[in-house]
Image (cartoon, rainbow, N blue to C red; front, side, top):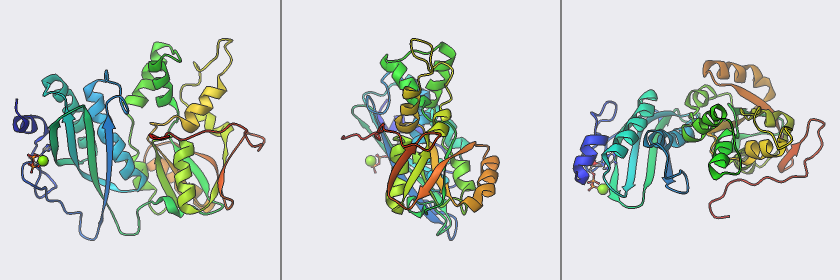
Length: 324
Ligand code: ADP
Ligand code: MG
């Protein structure tokens, strides 16, 4: 199978929304009249972002999911994407699984593949997504104000817990591991929530490198600080039951590290003024996505992690950084 046969067989479908899709030198795409294009790009490298043993179907899902998560964080509606692929070989089984996983999620969000590039090389996947949003309505990192509430969607930390099981530093019963592994391998991009939060949230970001790091981006861009109640945040890890130490005690140290600095969650962290609490609730219901209020924005710069009694935690948590 040659390069063009591969593209034709696995990545070419009839263009629906785009004026021109896969097959020419460029694709042609217009957002709806009056809308702004939202554009984002995320790369996945074998050994760095995913394990070589991962099921290609799940990898296809994740490669697009992490990109849709960026569109969600900006409150934009997915339209289309480009796929750049480096493959060690043209493996039919791999390509079949990968493309099925990719298109299953793409179709669920009505987001069409309009082009890309295919080359031989160490396995790497780079997707560029295009979304649309009315001008002035994109959710930015820079809009948080002192006094705003801080929220996160869904659950946090389970993806990291699964990674630790793969690394052999932890063990979990099979059912618990399967659930955590699904969070790591097939994250759910919070597109519906991002859309529902337009005009409600003052700032938003998606959590790819851990809550502390990604909330930190909002704080920096908004020139504010925050206070987070870790006694609420720690409950966001879905797998509480089996997170115990040798003596059977709840391992709160690991739980908190996974929640605050685990990474790979693809949930949204966002802020909204206290008088919008009912609107936030309504957005969560509309998007069928749970949200939890975990703290407050404050004028003083910096992130303050406190316990239930309001005492500052001595422990420090770092965001994931590829070059740190
Ligand atoms: P060019 O030589 O102009 O760079 P290519 O030969 O790389 O174009 O690709 C031919 C067509 O196939 C283009 O329309 C390109 O967008 C599309 N394409 C290439 N690789 C992929 C891919 N992995 N997924 C979707 N479309 C692809
Ligand atoms: Mg090319």
